[in-house]
Length: 263
Length: 263
Image (cartoon, rainbow over all chains, first blue to last red; front, side):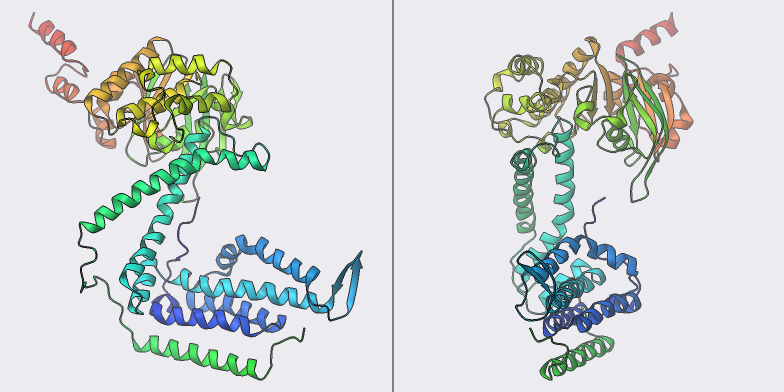
């Protein structure tokens, strides 16, 4: 079954924090991942994030890893590229024809692998603990124009609808003998036409209907009020302060050249 | 013709089909009824191989369908989906109808497409764009694109849903003709008038189980069963039951019973 949202309903500290604080933490974590390229530093950051999510977000480690699993081929590809085509420096530890595998490149491959995973996890941390509507509301409160906020909200809202539509269309075409698994790559691509055409047509129809529906409900009228509101509480401030301290410490370590490899 | 033995199927969400046993004989017309979420469509998707059962088996002419692909099953079981818009992709009606036979590598496609377009009263639209057809015509197009594969068993999912009376009647007429030709029919519907019009046997589902399977009049006469499943009988059947004549599906039959009771 398809998962349409990453949000996991839990009663945790992270879930109760104002999404604006979490957006800032997420951005800080993302930038900090770029600061370091020592595999031990980045690896520690990655594993700490998993434990942080377990303790403060009540997200089971198994669950976090299941979200990261689909990203593994991408991470492995990055690691292989680093091992095979990395820096010229370092000692050769193995050679196959002209390809030299070097110790520095293996270290960098692990660093980059952990960096990508930690970057993904810093975004997942926000998405796993924040409901979509709160995320959009937070962005609007952070001065994103409401039109853009609504666009994001609608895009997120329609992911499940379109995914379910795609499944229905695929089922209907399979019932007419369409075999997506058979044939060479070109034939396989061509076989997606009977799925893509109805999907695009239905999406346009949906968009038109939705546009009319929001127009009839006075979309675009200035000075709109909000049904839900976000209130920045003391604990959100403490959380934000802790995030800033964490970022400053990491920035200091980077300036002092800790956690970096010379390549 | 089709035999389901101890079929069990479970979605990740937890919904289950439990120990489904069903036998469909050639030429029968069966209505599958039950509330939303009772498992009707899940059962049918298992029958046509779009979902694969967890345990039990489905025998199609004695052959276990677990070894057959969806396309292979589609040669014998045709499933007309509820929403025809979910399958239309071609630029002409005849091209749309020829999609299935091409997938199944059936011979004499042009002749078969012509015949089926005549059967479904769409021949005059053979070169029209399918998106320009009315709702009723699109529904007949969906039926034509399955009929052209000449399946022995025809499954219709809510065939008259969203159709006006004229188009619904036209579709029913076509289906009745197919019944007379000896085609086996399975109809999923909430419309009890349609079920009583087309089917002589009813399979009643509730919470993933078959709770009754038998002659339509016998099941519609079972007060406790109707209460339990909140089935709404056709108006004529309600009236005949109030008058004490049992379940009757046509005014003519009711009149005959009334005359007989007064003679």
